[in-house]
Structure formats: structure tokens, C-alpha cells
Length: 209
Image (tube, rainbow, N blue to C red; front, side):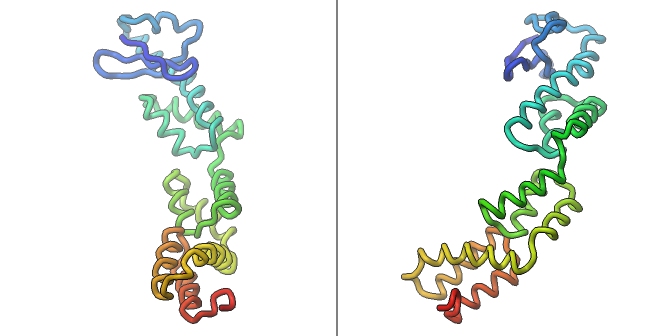
């Protein structure tokens, strides 16, 4: 048995068979933290349940202290640390939810609000980011529907296009349109909004040109 330091009081017990167990360096766990210890079946059971629950909670708190996480992200982080007992994982997720630290709907709402205020993007990109975080599709669509009217999306896209356009005044209009088209598409704006803005640039009436 090899003991590896992970972070703070968290340790990883690595067996010769390649199995790892997350455990806390705390009173009561001394016997597990002696290098070379041979584990009995009942001790392995404790590592997979009681010890995993204690260590998994600390790991989850550490992750959430840095930024909000989704239920999916917490579950993945636990399994990545070889916490595989579903009852243990469910207990940790449930504890975080009851304490208000884990809320996928709040996370989605805060993410959408942040992107609108500080890093504008269209609903397509926001939808992708939330899906990547494992947010439920129903929550994603509800947040997008409540935050992106067509006029709001158009306004955000126009603002980004205007900034980009200022750096391309010396280029031909068709080149500008091609680049604006690709840029807004990568930012996740809908095709109809992008086409309207590109058509406006071609007509030379974008921002009253």
C-alpha cells in the first residue's frame, strides 16, 4: 500500500493492484496511512463506504469553493477519484443540495446572466456550455427562453459585430461579411440573426452607414 498526498487532508491509498482509495488524514484513519499496510476485507469495505463518504465530501467542498459545480460535475469528480459506491455518491450529492451548495437551476441562471453581462454570446454557445456541464435539457431551455428574446439576441450580436467591424474598415465589404458571419456563428448566435446583420452590412445600412 502506497500513501499519496492529494490536497490538504486528502490522501490517496494506492494498492499494488492499481486500485486507489480517497481518504482523510485524520484521527481514526492512522492504520490506513501506514505505507505497506495489508488491508483486510472489512477494511476495504470501510474505505469504499464510510471513509469514501467523509473524503468525498471534503473533495466536493473544495471544488465548490472555487466555483459553482453541477451535479454531473460533482458525480464525475467523485468517480474520477475511484469513489464508485452509488449510495456514497448519492449521499454526498444530496448533502450538498440540502445545504444549498449544489443547484443546477441556479448555476444555469447565473451562467446565462454572467455571459450576458460580461462575455456576450448567443443561445447556441450558452446551450453547448451548459450541456457540457451536464445540466438537464429542460433547465437549459427554460433559462434560454427566459433570457433571450429575439430583440435581446439581436442587440447583443449587433454590439459584438460593431466592435469587430471597427477593426476591419479597410477590408472589402464581402470579406467583412464573411468574417462577421463566422465570428457570430462561433459565438452561438442564431442563423436568422446572423443573416440579418450580414445583410445589413452588405446594404451599407449597418449602424446607419
